[in-house]
Length: 266
Length: 266
Image (tube, rainbow over all chains, first blue to last red; front, side, top):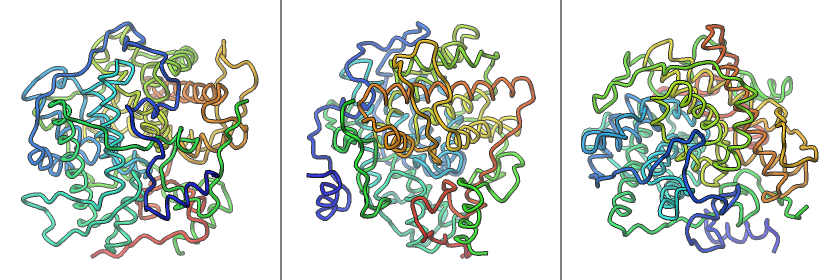
């Protein structure tokens, strides 16, 4: 079956493709080079150790923190702050030294360019900084696994799922499904459905609630990981599934003409 | 003039749109809320101070480090490591405590999903962690400004620009211009032009060289900032220019039907 046919056949069954390959760890996510390393000795010789000490957090409280922090540091840094501010209080270092506010630049899909939604980037930073990179050993692969789960959950879910106790906007905020982890697509589909402009208080509160929703979901996974009950939910492994790094719904941008990536080994 | 007409008119003049608004600082990049804050007191009450101590680095040496680090930690973490490993040696803390290797997850446009190229994300992390977030004061706006410059330079430049002294692949690596900061588009255009598959040694070495090119360019800007001669080059302010976070070449994905974002104030 051609790649394009595989896409269309799958898309006809389901809005967002699921990978054809089962999930057994996240090794196949690594499109670079696999199995080359067994430690996490940083280039400078400074040992980096994982996992960082983690204590279980209340998802509801974390989401409330993220919602309010959005109005201070926006999507990416708000997710990081909602988790790390609590761990600074409960654990201290190494969280105290992590420069949370520097990650404001994740706003607007990275300095306004509309790429990855900052809440997704922030959640991936949190899970990978706490649990560690895959080269630090098999037990650390859960950092990237939880990050990948965030991207898939975000893409498939009608967002926002979280409503704060004291919302700044009292009127209902409609939910939309992005089918993408990108800011531009997520915000654009919501703007189209709601009719609200980018600078409106409603759009801003929608993004604050999306940020809170991601933080809630992230902490639920981190708590499961701490309990030893976490299992990866996402199955998308782009490089091995379709021969290129990508999302799963190729036809949304490419239309009927989904390119076939070169596959010949040269 | 309609937004779509503006796009097409500009696209006809130039492959990649330039913003219609001049650059005076990066405040307009912030699509969230402007002018609300004047300090960088983190949520937990831990003071975060910027800028971090920076000493000028050799761009050529940094690029060589990034090239070789790509084969250990891949695009995003390789850019961070190429700068921070040198600053760990020359400065020490706070660089020593920054968990460089955790950022391997940026590979493949974030765990293989093809979103923002990891070298762009890594460069933005470096510039913003060193110089600081915009809420830490006007002098810290250069962190996001350098990050935005990276995104625009990456999109407009035939990459890779850097050739390592001892390349792992001896045959020529062709250059392609992505017109996008996204992994999927950058890698996809190179794969189409070169005919090499995602898992090929040539594609891998191309990405290692792109990572090195970004690190070289980043350090040149950081050195200029340290000298007090840095001026922002990028002018793209999506939210104010076109009413939504986005790239600049809307028609490449949208074709002729570029949606008009809602602009009415409700």
